[in-house]
Length: 464
Ligand SMILES: Cc1cc2nc3c(=O)[nH]c(=O)nc-3n(C[C@H](O)[C@H](O)[C@H](O)COP(=O)(O)OP(=O)(O)OC[C@H]3O[C@@H](n4cnc5c(N)ncnc54)[C@H](O)[C@@H]3O)c2cc1C
Image (cartoon, rainbow, N blue to C red; front, side, top):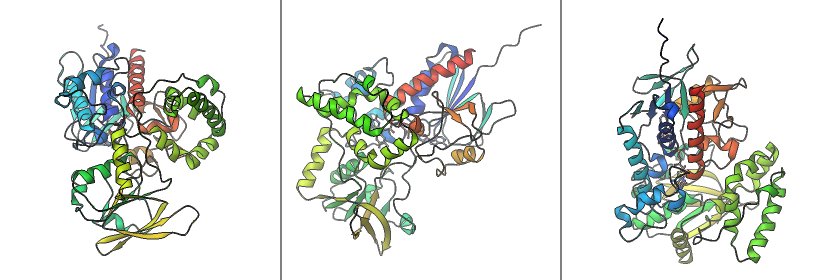
């Protein structure tokens, strides 16, 4: 009797931004998956760039140097070499390239894989996934908004960041007011702002820096108010600095935030004595940040989020030096005013918005602006995310939001933990959704590592 040939595995990757793209490319490199049928679900016109790198404006720069942005950790110059051959490098490759360039790098690499012939099958579906119910045989039926259903052995959620939650409540009328800009990345959104219109930005992170620079580029002249809880701009990158040796071994047993800070400060002083800036000291720990975070009990993680997460973001997520200099210039000229405080209320007032700001421990004040742009961080709390796919998986108990509202509970491979406490054999995730495990699960260096590791893990499971 002929032995039946097993059907090739079907892997569906939902989300074709950086993480989904990197995963697909790493899956294609796995010999055990050479025959696999891989489906990439991404509704954007061009798959690959995702939210961060679809921006077309040349003033939106990457916040990492080209040497840190290769799709492949084992070929660190892959992006830098590509960039060298692009028209924007005619006078030498930029130290911080535009995000649009990086988006092109991703889409070119992905489209080469989509166009490749050979065994296996890679297909892009330009639509969204709306549900992925489990089938009686243990596989999943990924249902797409266009009516297609893909019966899959493995489904990977690479959904990225969801839009910021409303910055103030409970009166949410402002969310529908024309002066409120909920999404600073929406195409042509900022172009609705006239050159002399008053503008208030909520948040002072990298998004706010981009919005300031884009407004200036568009000829905006009026002063801009920026309201932020901690009142600091992202720190600037320094010119490629000497590295500092890794000192994780001194932190491996630390289970408190204060203990970690004490060790860090000691090394900061040692570095300072050698003329080394604090940045290389922090960067020395980059590969171990996940382990440091995971060693803290929940109470310590909460303490970090409450007291230090803002400062951490300022130190860790840095601006290209030219962006930091532009913000400093605007501030010195009085064109940007940074106001420390929390936005408590936003109320419509004719064609303007009134914003109540509460500085820490002091009485609040009202500010009025013709435009309010939300530059706050993304929503990662999966118990509040309203995306249909997330909602249906949550309601079926197939995913578990973490107690700190940072993402999803998973194992070390990204397999989702169901509400019954069991690990899924079919459902995985990568990207910002894995913040509960690592805290830093946002930037290219971390995500490409997750993509490579998950591709290897799926290849191993198929090979069993
Ligand atoms: C403005 C901005 C600038 C950044 N700059 C940098 C930088 O310079 N360097 C750096 O290292 N990191 C940067 N980051 C961090 C960035 O988040 C990561 O580098 C990376 O792009 C995240 O990739 P991702 O695939 O997880 O998310 P995304 O790129 O957002 O991709 C997720 C994709 O999933 C799709 N999707 C969502 N739901 C569904 C669904 N139900 N069905 C189908 N598709 C779906 C979306 O359309 C989206 O394209 C930046 C982030 C932002 C927001």
